[in-house]
Image (cartoon, rainbow, N blue to C red; front, side):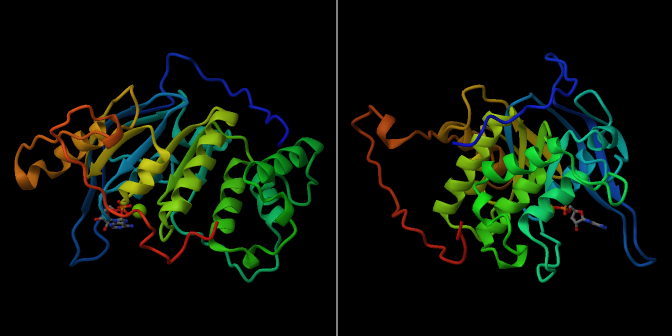
Length: 299
Ligand code: ADP
Ligand code: MG
């Protein structure tokens, strides 16, 4: 049983959403004389309440990574505004309020650096060079490794981890600063269903223990369903389905009804779990859920 995790007391107001996005558009400028500007986001409005797990589902090129870069303050909106815990994205990031798991892990995995050193660097990278980690730093690093269950592999070179272990190391790196908001960009590419469920359980545990607000973006509905309790669809514009009851089959069906309306027109989908159905006239068929994708998921 890992020790209780200290939840950093960052100044947040109960009434204020964790993330407030108002009328945000973003256009990438033309890069050469024969290229055009690309409007990646068009007039996005979104409030994310503290301690919820929002999934943002959208096709490749739909603007998910752009939205994340705006939330992290790495890009500035062409129009509109974003506040994170009542602060600008840049200030929130500098205050250590945002933990981030990037879409691609851009580390040189042959570099002889241990898992613990990677997590330590994340915690101490804003310090003056050669400053030793404090006891508080060391405790936070140990807790982060324990929360992702990598304490026994802490001294292993980062390049010697399996795909699933590496992803957990990157989560430990993201939470080592004790953030209030955790942002995950396409976290489960190439992970099978069982691996996605384990990842979802891990994020759930972290969310509860650290009282996190979580944003996960993916083009994969299963990845979103494994993690999120709210869902929005993003394809340059955003449709947010606010469902206090959480992410149920009916909610997903409504979200997809919106998503496919441009192709099929208005459709009506009646979705429910077979075991919750009390209509004897319904027949329920189910596909075989044996993992069809054996390409990854070695957690
Ligand atoms: P997603 O993460 O949903 O796949 P992105 O946010 O990466 O989508 O991209 C949204 C759109 O912006 C795409 O049309 C993409 O080609 C374009 N885009 C992304 N990055 C750049 C960039 N640096 N310069 C120009 N266009 C870009
Ligand atoms: Mg992306």
